[in-house]
Image (cartoon, rainbow over the protein chains, first blue to last red):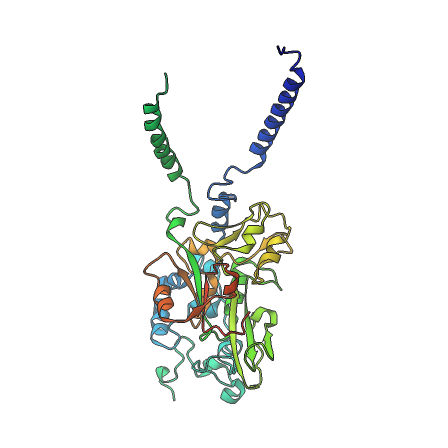
Length: 157
Length: 243
């Protein structure tokens, strides 16, 4: 017959094992973030944290609220599908506080050339010019209205 | 109370229904946004890309990407022959300020915008030892920078070279497909500023998204399809020389 005394070493082993498990589970509960495993093997709260990053580019829908006249002109011209912030840069802060944050005036010599300087890598059907030959250094907006760049549209020849 | 077999058979489905009910109230990232309604990807049209670099600049400004690192970049290819011979690729500063004009040396030349492919079976998330990088329920591969150790396994694992270690935070970083924008109903910063529509955000779960019509009517390819990563950045007009 087996007595308690005979099994003492087994009980000690079991006690040590249980104590170890308790420490492990306590540490695990303490160290693993609450939302870990909510959607998968990652911290579920990270989704919300990443989504909470502030926006810099407001999106053209926001521009329309105040600048509908310019958007109307742009819509009819060749730049109709170019978003405002493509040229004007990120304007979410301007949209929030239009009074004190004013977008800087743009340098058309740099801006226009970036897209329209001729290069054989560009698609053939994209309008391209050799800037020096085309205007010998005159600013593009001397002749072209950037929001509707076709010269006929401005009534000039 | 004794638990009879009859009671157990009734209680088990009841418990399952109760558990569903508890899980249904789990909060998600944005109040009106349901992650399970979307499956994000992007359409990139090489026949429209002009290499202006607007996307690279917008990405940097929107996501505060440090100088010299890129979440998206543009490559210029010059191919003289059948693709693998005399291939020239350049991407000065990621194409951020456009490309210097190249003398026409014959052959063909084109621009290829690149970014994280948001693979459905992404190699980078598989190797993360701590679960700091993951595929969100709406199909975006994200990095949890609070949880990232900076071990760089994912950077080596990405076959498209889309990841880097942020020198300031010392954590892995990559394109988040502007998760903070798409969950608010906006498009990504790069797609917002693309003047020719060469980049278009695509919601593959939305039947009204024009991407479905495009995929139906065009020969569209992903990068390195032999790797079976389930890439969700679809390229129109992709040349065989592009890696």
